[in-house]
Length: 267
Image (cartoon, rainbow, N blue to C red; front, top):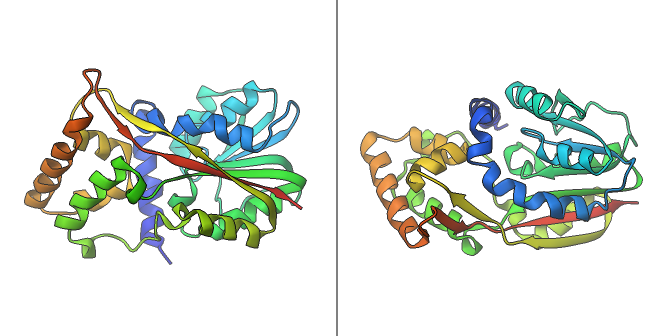
C-alpha cells in the first residue's frame, strides 16, 4: 500500500538532497536540541538517527560524544550525510525494517521522518525493538494546520484549487499531530514515561517568493502542485504568496511553523 507515495518521497528527497541545507534545514534543525534532550543523550551512548536525511541529528549526537549511526531511504541523502559528518556511520535503510539486531542502541530519534513513511506505527515499533531496555526514543512532528500558520496558508490553496485525484494515495501527514494519538501509539509500542515537548519553530525564507520556497522545501505538497494544470499551479502560487505577505520582515519572510517532540522509555 502507498507504493507510489513511497517511491515519490524517496526520489523527491533524493533530488532535494543538495539543496536541503538552503530550505528544509532552516526549520527542521530547530527541533534537534529538543530531540537530543528528550532522549537524555550521554557521552558513549550508541545513537540511531532514523530517516537521517543529511545527518544533522547524528552529527549533533556525535558532537556530544555519542557513537552515531544514521539510516535513510535516499542514497543521495546518505552520501551527503557521510560527506558532512565523516565521524558518523551512515547507510541506506528502511525505517519500517531496521537492519539492526534487537537491543542495539541506547537512544534513537526520528526527526520529521514518520510522516514520510507508509506506516508510522510500524516505524515506532521498529525503533522500540532496536533499543536496549531503558533506552529512549524521540520523534519530532509538525503541528497540524489549525496550529501552524505555514501549513494553513499552504494547505488551504491546495484544498481550494487542486485536483487531488492526480496525486498518489498517501497516509495522513498530520495523524500524529494529534498529541493524544501520538501518546497512544507510543504506549501501544511499549514505551513508558511518554513526554511531549513543544518546539516554537519558524520557517525563515531568506529569498524568493514563498511559493518557490515551498516547492523546494517539501516533496508531498510540491508533487501535488506539480501534477496540476498550469492555471491551477498559478492560482495556488498567487494564493500562497498573498497569504505570506504579512510575514515579510525585511530580512525575508518568517512564518510560524511549530512542531513538537514526543519521547518515551523502553521498558
